[in-house]
Image 1: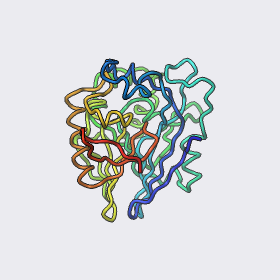
Image 2: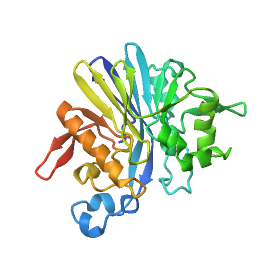
Image 3: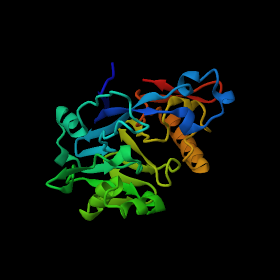
Image 4: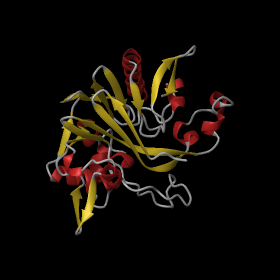
Amino acid sequence: MTEYIKTLQLGAARITIINIGELKFDFAYALDVPESEWSPRYASVFEQPMPLPIQCVHIQLPETSALVDASLYNITPDSRFAIPHYQPPPGLLARLAEVGVRAEDINHLIITHPHFDHFNGTIMERDGQHEPCFPNARHYLSRADWERAQTQEALQDPDSTESRSLGALHRHGLLELVEGDLDLGQGIQIIAAPGETPGHQIVRVHSEGQTLYCLGDLYHHPVEVEQPAWMTTWADETACNASRQALEAAALKENALLIATHIPTVGRLQRTESGVGWVVV
């Protein structure tokens, strides 16, 4: 049975992982790894598409309420990501309310990168207008992702997800463009981790000697931890490799907990005979 809400304590920080629904992901298509390289060891990953969660992470500290990505399950039945006859759980705002988090109390919202399933829950439609779901939050997107041609082109289309959300946040004065790393205080840092997109960023949380990273799409599956050269076909290989190596070194040194958007388990990195693996916590 799918677990849609998980909570863990990290020092003084309460971490809540909210799965807003599952999508169908075809690793054979997305990673384009020759069968001779993955068979038979990783046959279960590549032979057929598998369901992956879409997870947002809420971080509650004594003086800070932060959210990493805000997603809305709006996958249409004809999408290649759609699971036939799938019924998604309650949405992000409803789930936050269940755990006692009010949308208006969130003061930081970090968008790891502008793929639709990471930011399409930042805006709601009210009386024909697109209004922010988290009206008091600064929304952090990398400048590199905002300025890339694909985003700018989408922003010119009033019907695009980018225009209705990122564009609306910009018009409301709630969007902050991040260059490099950014310290938000209270032990929360945005760290540049390009590769999946030019401005992909991850989040580090440190409290009372414990560390956690929210990885966005740095990895989509533990197989990419074991085989770091495997990545999505749309990623920048050089940048992604560098970002993964930096995270690997830091996470091993800090014995950090790890949460990735599409990996259903909380994990840690552990050295193996052949390199590094993802260990479920």
